[in-house]
Image 1 (cartoon, rainbow, N blue to C red):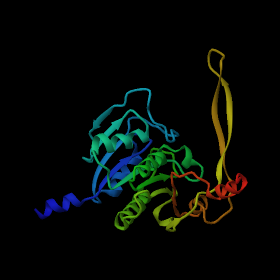
Image 2: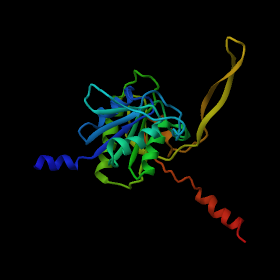
Image 3: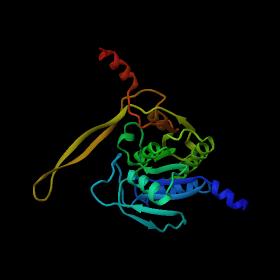
Image 4: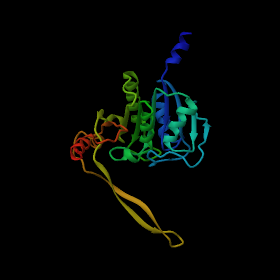
Length: 262
């Protein structure tokens, strides 16, 4: 009976991502948090990078149970990362989990990337639904990336959040530098840097001679502050940025109230 009571109190951890249910990043995230609660995976059946907060409204959504070697309950979804969170809560768990984890993404989600990221949009969707959430990303696009340091720090962060029981709308954007664990200087809570991609469209022609365009560009950091996620990562810190779904600019709101005052 005592063992049964302990199991009922175990936190429920919903895990998703935008790289696909079989991506190394999500499997490493599962390994990082094993033993911290009951883990259930609901993730896209194919890569969904750059989907942002897209939802599927014009075609049917499907769930398929997936067998993983680690024995964790896992489901693939033909929708977006946000769809995965919605279906995971409503159709798989039938209740809200204690925490939602998204990632570990293959590639950075610092600065402006948070706007476009399917990884972070899944976490933000959970936050909207009053589920504390964390999105994790590693600054390495390779499917053969070394996740050992990311696993270590992901576990530390999740353990502390579960222990503290912070706001139900908590949403953290966590990025790991792509360096050996011995080179990481610790965890730094930051603000989002003002940095973005200076984009260009490479014009090409297909075999029939018709034009098409391929998005290219270079990442440019306009923010010289030493309290940003970009600075932290460049200096081998794990960056932690608290984000929110309320996009209101309160400083501008105050100014506009005076401007439009009758």
